[in-house]
Amino acid sequence: MEIYTRLVQFSPAPGDKCRPSSTPIYQTATFEQDSATEFGDYDYSRSGNPTRDVLNSQLAILDHAYGSFAVNSGMAAIVALASLLEAGDEVVLGDDLYGGTYRYFERIARKSGLTVRHVDTTGLAAAREAMTDKTRLVLVESPTNPTMRINDIRGLAEIAHEFGALLAVDNTLMSPYLCAPLILGADVVIHSATKALSGHADLTAGVISAIDPEVSSQIAFAVNAQGLALAPFDSWLLLRGMKTLAIRLDRQVATAARLAAALSEHSGVSAVYHPSLPGFANQDLHRSQCTGDGNVISFQTGSAEASARLIEACKLFRTTVSFGSVTSSISLPFCMSHASIPLGVREHRAFTPDLIRVSVGIEAFGDLWADLEQALEAAKGARLPDLALATG
Ligand SMILES: *Cc1c(COP(=O)(O)O)cnc(C)c1O
Image 1 (cartoon, rainbow, N blue to C red):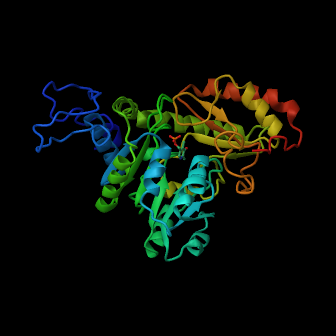
Image 2 (image 1 turned 60 degrees about the vertical axis):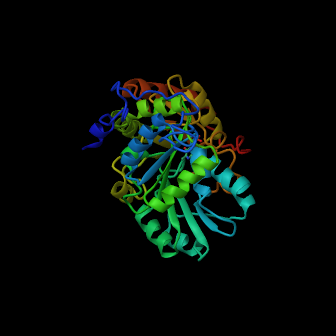
Image 3 (image 1 turned 90 degrees about the vertical axis):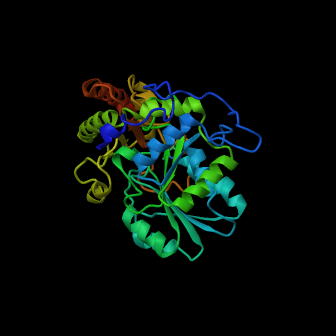
C-alpha cells in the first residue's frame, strides 16, 4: 500500500468488540489481572497501553522498523537512545544538532562516563577519522538544522558498521514521509513528533525506532525502566495528527519551494538555504536519500538587527520555536532553539546571528509571501552590519 493509504488504513482497535472507527483512549493507569499469578496483555500503562500500542505499530510501519516506541518528547527519544550506551563508550555527534541534543550529551550523558565528539560528519573522511574501536554510536541529522547541510546516511552507516557502532538519524526535519533512514542503512531513527508528525503544535512527543530486534528490546526496556512512554491521550492526538502527514507535507513542501525561490530573488536577503534551490550544496545526495525537500527554510539578511525586525514585523509567521505545524512560524535559532550551544561550537559559516528559520504551514502561498515581503520592507532601515545579538 502507498503511504497515503497506510496512514489512514489500519486496525484502529484490535480486539475491541464495539469495533470503533477511531482508536479509543484507554485512559487508565492499571488493568485488572485474571489472578495473582496469571497476567493479561496489559497491567500498567507505563509498561503498555492499547492506545499507545496502536500508535507504535503505525510508527513501525512508517519507519520500516522492527520496533517503534512513542515517548514523551523528542528529548525522551534521545534519552532512550543514550541508554544503549555504557561508561567508556565513545559517541560521534554531527556538529549541527538540535540544541537540546547537544545540551543533553554535554551536560547529562557525559556524567555517566561517555566520551562525546562533535564532528562535521558531512565530510565522510572526517567522520571516519573520529571513529575508534570504542565508538558505539554515531548520531546525525540531515538536512542539519538550521544550516541545512546534508549528511550521507548510506556512507555514514557503512563507516559506523565498520567500527561496530550504530548509526542513529534524528529524522525530525524530514519525518518518515520524506525520508526512511532505516532503509538507507541506519540502525536507529528518532523523531521529535512535536513537529511534523503531529503537525498541529498541540502536543510534545517523540519516537524512537530500531531495525534490529535486539536493539528494539533494549529500547523497550529503557523506555519502561525510565518512564519515558507517551500518555494515552497524547498517543491518541499523535495518531490523529499522523493521518494527514502526507497531504499536509505535500502542500507545505511545495509552498516552501516557492517561498525559497521568491526569497532568493529579494534584495533584502543575502542567502537562502532550502534543498529545492538550484545550486543547493549536495542537492543530488539529498534527493538520493529523501523524497522531498522539507518545509523548513533558512535565510540570512546580513544583519542581526534586520533579522530581528523582520521577525517582529511578520503577522502570519508567528514567532515561535519548533516547526512542522500547519501554522507557519518564524524564529531566530541563534537566540531561540539553539541558544544552549556555546558560541565557539556554533562556528559554521552559515550559523550566524542573522540566520532566520521559517517553517511553512498550509496557508496560501500568496498570503505567506505578502507577509514576508512587508516584513522585509519593514526591516530595510536596519540593515547595518552588527553583531548585537551575538550573546547567545
Ligand atoms: C525539537 C527537536 C528535538 C527535541 O524534541 P522535543 O519534542 O522538543 O523534545 C530533537 N531533535 C530535533 C531535530 C528537533 O527539532
